[in-house]
Image (cartoon, rainbow, N blue to C red; front, side, top):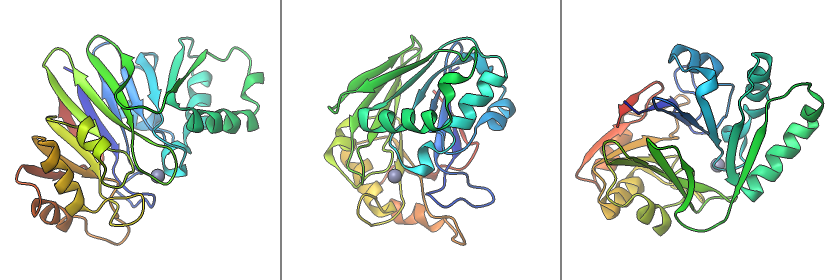
Length: 251
Ligand SMILES: [Zn+2]
């Protein structure tokens, strides 16, 4: 069965049990990583993911707490003798910078490096990004401090769907992107420019008429995140949970 596993749930500041927000979709044939703030290799091993099955890496935006792990992760796959291509998806703004970051490491000179296929996405709503039979992924621009995308994933075997806001202010694009999904994973970094509070995440979930809301990218450095659930419940009548590290949701 296809599942989502939360690999990290923190905002930009991690704590002992909260890595920066990123996640993985594990299917029977393909595995898709969403963001790469740190090297996910050990977590993927713990989850029993076959590294050759990682077909896609989606990078939502070029902030360090979303892309810092990319060079080391890609290097480790190479050291572990990967041969299959890896598809890397993101906006032009994001991928231009990721490629520059890799160039600083002179990765083009690493002998026998497996093919990287960069897929630059146009900045419009509901762009089809990945179609792998068991899941389809779409992206829409959201409202953050740099160009960023939110994601919708539809699971073809079960007709279920999820959405991930990524970092964003409350915006209509996320409401449209997540319309009617079973699971909305929404950031809850706080009421600040480019971000959303738990209460506002609840409003978005209500407006999009989703079935359940999982808060992610919340403050956890010397903060107890549990009250964020109650805060979101003030504006959303459905089920509210904290996305925590290694939480699995089956689709
Ligand atoms: Zn950000």
